[in-house]
Structure formats: C-alpha cells, structure tokens
Image (tube, rainbow, N blue to C red; front, side):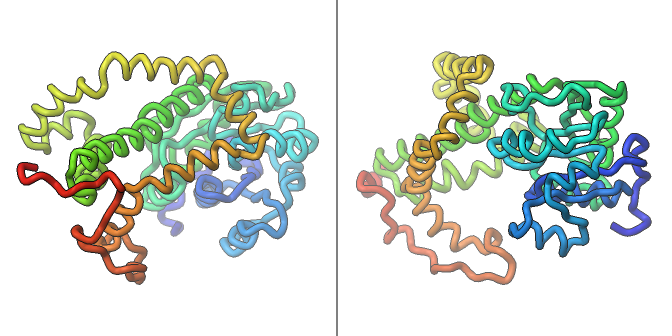
Length: 356
C-alpha cells in the first residue's frame, strides 16, 4: 500500500507484536494487511518449508513457530484445523507469554475441546467472511471483507478491544463486524459447508447432471444447465440476495423456481439438514473427522477421489478448455476442446430424444 492509503494503527495493537502462524491464503493476507495497518508482524513457520521463502521474499521477519510465539503479544493461529492441536501443545502453549492473546480464525478446536487454552491468556476469534485473496484485495483498494469476532477468554479485560483492533487491522473494521461466539461460529460454519455451500451444492449439481444424462440428454448440455450456469445465480444471490435473483431471471425461471423448487428441497431435505446440524451440535461430526484424520484419512481420500473421477469432471475439463476467461493469463488451454458429438461422459449416456 502507498502512504496515502495507509490507515492508523489500531490502538489496541499499537504497542503489540503479532505473530502470524501459518502463511497460506488467510495467513499471508492477514500478515500483509496488519503490516500495512502499522502493526509489527512476524511470521512463524517451520524452517525449510515452501512458505518460508515466500514470506521472506515478501519482506517479513520469519522465525520458527516457538520463537515467534515467545516474541509476540498476540498469536494468530492460521494453520489448518487438524494441525492446530499438536502445534498448540508443542509450540504455542509452552512459549506463550502470560497475558498474551491467542487468536483463531475458526473456533473448531476450542469449541470441541481439542485445544484447551491456558487460563492466563486472552482467547479470541476473528473470521473474515471471504477467502484470503479477497481479504487482501479489498483491503488494498480501501474496503474490507465483513468479519465476525468472538471472545472465549478475557483475562486482561481488553480481549474484545484486541479482537476488534485485529479485525480493523485486516480491513474487517471497514464493514461492521458482528459479535458471535466460538460455538455459533463453529456450528454455523460447518453447517453451511456441509448442507449448502459444499456438500449440498455439489451433490445437487451431480444429481441434476446425472438425471439429465440418464434421461438421454447430451452430457455437455447437462453440464451447462446444472453446473456452468450456477455462477450466474450465485453471483446474483451474492450481490443482492433472492430479490436480486428474481429481478434478473426470466418469469419462466421464476415460476419454475417457486413451484418446482419445493419438489427438491422439501420436508425430507429439511429433516436431513436438521440431522446434519444435530451431528455438528453434539460433536459427532467433529469426533468422526478427528478419528478419520488420525487414521490417515483413508475414507476421506476415497470419497474425494470418487468426486474427482465423477463423469461430470471429464465433461467440464473439455468444455472449460474453450473458455479462455477461465485460463490463467498468458496460458493457452492444455488440450483443444472436444466437440459435443465426440465427448462421452458416462456409459449411461444415450443420444438425446428428438423431442428433448
């Protein structure tokens, strides 16, 4: 950022050193935004890792995690959920200053008891509602991604002020932060991912595509109608909610939405959503995922591979090769697009009926 866009250092962080542990999507964005907000930032990374060179090249002081923690007044834990408990036990807890602040961007480990923070520290959460690249980009142009924040422990009496200062430092203070709890953030985040954003959306797309292909329609046409055009609707919802979607889609689409949507998302769907939520609330999902991770992820890897090998993916790769706006700048498609007639997605695919 230039000096003309630099913002005032948040008061509660003015004389504090922040250690950002992890330098992935969120970690790098938080570190850069905090630095540009006038906060002293060091980055904690294991030596020799690929992100160490990247963080150094981008001008950060990089130390091993334990050293970074010892030097910090606020430690932001921005590594993947399943890596956090061991990191906390081995690197953070023994080295964290009394009276320091421990910050998370997701409440999973604290809420489900995988991390039990020391009682002599503040424990807070700041979660931007967007990916790291967006957090950085919006900050650079003078805006901010909305964030939620929470206080789990307030040993100092200043935990909320520190959380809000951190939120301001990464740009979230420019869009009104919403106070939540570790419980609410964790459970709603998991539910949204499982029932709607990831699990719900991808399984709905796959089921729609399979329904059309099994009925004899071309896999490519099914791809466009059930996956490709989803972005149009999601963008409208993102920009202005359901009102915006209805404003821009045809009356035919609106009528079909209002009358046939309930065929798909019905009482059975809502019952299953309540089941998903119940397994999050009572800890069943967390226990299952933790056990899976500790076992080496055999089921996770098998399920993920099945998704990656779904026939819709083969169709999509060929069709997207003809969409230059989806290619990285300066790169040509790896393979020329196949024609619709030459692409076979599934053994079940049949020629479309004349009436289709």
